Amino acid sequence: MKIVNITIRQLKMKLKDPFTTSFGTFTDRDFLVLEAQDQDGTIGWGESVAFHSPWYNEETLQTNWHMLEDFFIPLLLNKEIHHPDEVSELFAPIRKNNMAKSTIEGAVWDIYAQQTNQSLASALGGTRDKIEVGISIGIQQSIEELVELVDGYVKEGYKRIKVKIKPGWDVEVMRILRNTFPDVAMMADANSAYRLEDAELLKQLDAFNLTMIEQPLASDDIIDHAQLQKMLETPICLDESIHSLEDARKAVELGSTKIINIKIGRVGGLTEAKKIHDYCEANGIPVWCGGMLESGIGRAHNVALTTLSNFTLPGDTASSNRYWDKDIIKPEVVSENGYINVRQAVGIGYEIDCEAVESFTVAKKHYK
Ligand code: OSB
Ligand code: MG
Image (cartoon, rainbow, N blue to C red):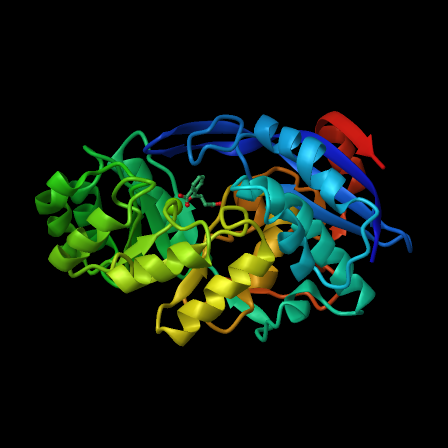
C-alpha cells in the first residue's frame, strides 16, 4: 500500500443535547475527518477525536491539523507499507500527539481491511458478531432530570449506565440512582475531579455496588490512584492516565487500575489499542471501549475494536441517534436492546454519507 492522496476536513455537528462533564459542557462537536487514498484507488477514513479546546487532554483540533499537515502526512505520503502496524513505527520518532496519529492510522487500517477483503473487526482479530453497549450520561440540571434520562436508557436496553460525577454531584446522586434502579449495572466517571484527600467521600460510593469508578484523580496520575484503590472496594478504571501499552503496564503493576477504558485516539491508534487489549487479557484486566462523542466514522472504528475478546464490559458506543439528528455514515449505528450488530462489509463496514460530510464541512485541505 502507498497512500498518495489525503484530504482533511473540519466538521461541525450539533449535538442533540448538550453534554456536561466535570471539565465543561459541549453543545457542538468540532472535529477532523481524514480521507486517505491508496495508489490502487482504495479510500479509507479516520476521525480525530480531539476537541476544540484542550480540556480532556492537551490536544485540540488545531494542534491535530498542524501535526498531521507538518509531520504525519509527510511521513506517510508515498511510502510503501505492508501493514497498518508500520504506521505507528513511522510515527514513533514524534512524541505524543496520539489523537493526531490515530486519525491517519485509522484510515490506513480501513484501507488495509478493504484490500484484504475483510471487515475492520476481523482485520483486527475480533471475534464477536455483536457487541454489548452502555451509555454515558452527562451532568444534568437536577437529579429528577437525571433519573428520567436513566429510566429512558434502561428501557432502551443499554447494558450499563455511566454517570458523570463532580464534587457536589456525586454521593447523593449515586445513592438516589441506586435506590431507583437497584439492578442496573452502573458506574461513575469523575474525569479527574477529585484528589487523594477526597478518599473519605469517594469511599461512600462503595455502598452503591458500582461496576467501577472511572478516573477519579488527576489526569496524569498513577501513584495516587494506587493509594486510593487500596482504600476503595469499587474497582478503579483509568481513562485519561493511559496513553500507551507502557502506561497500562505500569498502572496495572502498581495496582492503580483494575479495569482499563481503551480509547483509540487517546492511545495513538488501533495498533496500540490492540497491544493494550492483549496485555490486559494476559493479565486479567477487563477492558471496554470509551467514547469521545464520535461521529459515525469514529463510532465504526470503536465497534470494530470492541469485537476483540477481552472487551468484556459494555462500552460507551451508543447509537448514532443518541448524539446526532443526522450522522455521516449509512446506515447509522443502531443499538437494539443494548447490542450493536457488527457489520460484515469490508473496511469499517459503513458507507460514508458524502453529502452529509459536505454539509457539515467548515474547512478542507488536500495533500499529495
Ligand atoms: O471521559 O469518557 C469520557 C465524553 C467526552 C470526553 C470524555 C469522556 C466522554 C464521555 C462520553 O464519557 C462518551 C460518549 O458517549 O461518547
Ligand atoms: Mg472517562
